[in-house]
Each structure stands twice: as structure tokens, then as C-alpha cells.
Length: 83
Image (cartoon, rainbow, N blue to C red; front, top):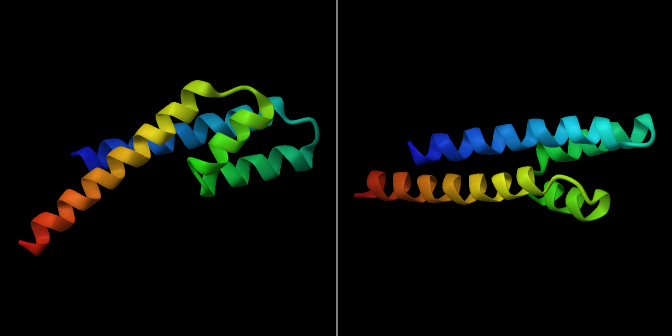
């Protein structure tokens, strides 16, 4: 359950950052690079995006929380399997 919620938060965060990258990018190349980076390298790309573009605090925090929840859910699932 926690694993799924973390994955959902990360997905919402990635989509939100992709929309922001297309909205705030100055050129087509910059928009595409930010969109790809935010899709594949969340939350690190989201953190960098926030400090470079000065926008996207809420999705950045959501992405970090999503990664923490996903990691916690994964570790508890592995613990259950190993028992």
C-alpha cells in the first residue's frame, strides 16, 4: 500500500514537472531536456529544476516524499519476503 502510494506520488510529481518544463522553458531544446530529465531522474532533476528555474516547490516536496514512501514500502516488502 505504501509502495503504491509512493509510486503514485512520484508519477504525479514527474508529470507536474514535465508540464512546468514545457511552460517555463525558453527554447524547444531546453523544454525537451528538462522534460526527459524530470521523467527519468526524479526527484534529483526536480530539485535541480527548482533551484535553476525558481519554480516547482510543491512538486519537488511531493517527489521527495514519494521516494521516501516508495523506499520504505520496498524495504518492508523485502523484509516480509525474507521472513
